[in-house]
Length: 394
Image (cartoon, rainbow, N blue to C red):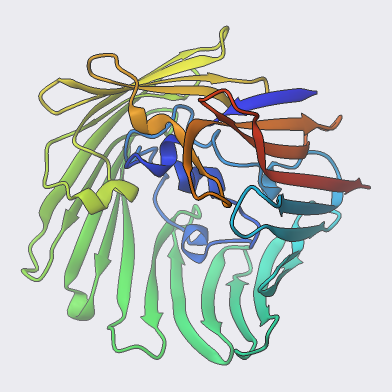
């Protein structure tokens, strides 16, 4: 089976975190903060991101289907397509419960190996060892450890590098029903004070409050949920140095019958350009889906109701984008959505379209990904990247 995924490389020129979404992977294991008990996950779009959040991510280890024991990925940048051709390999190993237990990455600079240890289905530790080829710098190791109480709930988390401990989360508290009530954070070896995070519940509202020294409040987040536990309202207030909470931003959300986000509205606030990677832009984002045609449309309006940007996308049967078009308020295609390739020999820039061709096995996992560049001037298309994945099943 072969699919053509046109990604157009809007990501390099527009203030949207598309590139980060496409490159996100869980190959190294787990993020400490995301593993901590906390409030519900809100669906905030941090800028005019693509439709169907998450579908633009490159295939990652957690997306592998079937009883996989090992996967070898060989990533090649062909000679003549870039100033520095290269080859990278990633070897992934899984246990009988489909947990990622080992991830080894190699390139021209060195080797990185991550080992995850599970017990009774729960992650106990993760160590990542880094080793350079030239050995000019000493090897170093990152580590994380998790501990649980008799009911299987997180009770302690630590991380660090080599023999130094950097962060320590402890004193986790839970309600009789198992809902998290709070935890303490201690920055090991740092001058910063300890903080305590507290969770409060009132009907369909969850409030997260963080306190500093002497129980001085730092910030507050409020989540309002619908009967399906979707976040329909989210607000953040920051105390700053004054010690008095002040609203930062407030956002509401709407969903369709399938639980997909259809509208996000954020009140006008002091929105800095550097916030686009994490905070929602002021205004309204409206998303429409057409499941029969496998298409979607995302429109971004200013707080005053003026259309600013319209994104149109088409998807294949695997949920990956096959075509994307970005239009301005007048319906003109945004020029920066066109891709650019620089000839490594002549250093001349060529405009054109980037395309990814993928093949899949019987389990629905991709086996090859090839990135091609087709110049607008009619020249032959150029293979700029090739990834082969060899999967071993139980």
